[in-house]
Length: 319
Length: 291
Image (cartoon, rainbow over all chains, first blue to last red; front, side, top):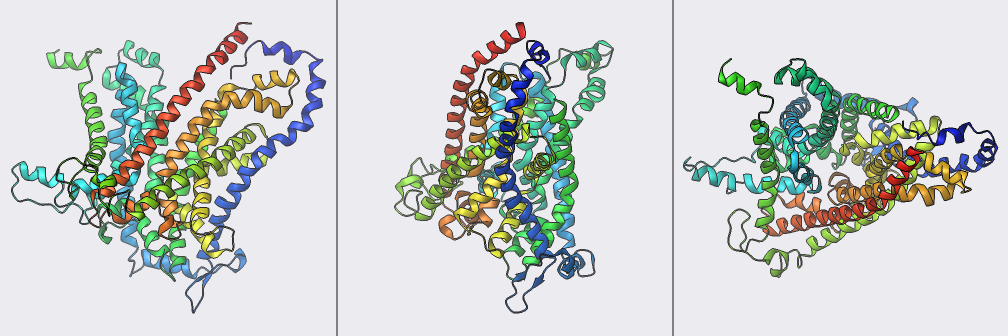
């Protein structure tokens, strides 16, 4: 906190105090009045909808119309729908299990690949950007302004059977080789996720690495640490909070992703939990199932979400 | 010490490897999109084989070009409509929310702040499904289509202006507002005449960010769309990308790209202009510090 010294005498001065107290009542209602519209909006359209999901998952299904019948009172909640979904995840006919496992594998490997790409790029721009830094930063931010769908469409164009990728493979002397890239290949979906979410990782990493105090790095070198040792024992450790924040910010949206798999494969062989939500949510009679998947993802996402909220709040309090 | 290890230890060695990774990344991240834009100007039907330059898919083709295909037309205008309306609601709501959260002490604002942070990181699909349930299962004024889409988008985007404005409020501090009140301004006037002008760059930045994010949104607008007339461009791309589309789809996507970049450039110019006025602010700051 940097309160300019000029204000200090004013605070200590006695006569100013009553005047401030006089105006208190008016500003006491001002801040709540400003905050309440937003708070009410979030209560009605963020918190309440999540409760509606619970009421539907633990509610019943109309026997004739197959429409969900939400149960509002938690005392009357019926776990039949949820345990039904749960049985299909772990039980003998656990046909939802593979998709959940696949989601974990895809999200973890895509996040790891994202970090492998994003860290060196962010490190290079933060440390050695030089006079190109502004231009490079603009190019790094550019994917943010390009819609996700357009970026996936770009890859669909490149990877389709007569696309540029196959064509250049053919030119490269690989003969009549035509790989059907978009036919349910896991690694294509993972690379699509990496392509889609890596910009979200580079930016927080860049901010974190840019803030590293240069004198600490110089001190490490002056004290005899080599390049590798400086990086491993100083840079990497100091940038750990940024790495964790960046991982959280990429993992969380990936958990609900279904469109990447839909566009780059479209096959149930690469279905993620998002695809399970997407296919059940619009099917009559399966609304409860969709709700159960939403609840499942919410529970899994709760820990990273809490971590993020905690770090964001402590950052706000300390600075 | 061998030459190799001396080279490795040299503190002034240029990081060629890192440079190569960065350049490679930039090419990989931008070239596919650039190719897609180039093929939107293709004269033929192919999105992979160059057949000459034309504006056929923008307006030349009497049936399938963006200009003449009603569905593309609708998608484009609906996207821009959502962008404008959602931004116009989100930014004032968020700025007021940020001011209130920053100054109001107690449990309610504390809880509201936590909820706001959750809304920032929740996977979008979860919020979209929850809102879909609300709209379809409950009797609310919201109906599938524009009203539900706007409500969903505002909910999802509200945290951006709040986070940006609060970060700015933290650097501004309370002294200017206090000075205005000491000089006889009412709290409301202090906000309007002192705080809001100082927050203008942050407000503008968040408006641009929200607008660009809304016109690129896919998950919420898809679930909450009513019929084909409320399906924005992202949904149109999703629906047709794998169904043998013409380069008109590339043209549609390129137009959205153009809209985003125009918003960013306008935002950047205005931001610079607003920051230019801030020179006074920083001189005030140094003046106060020097006293």
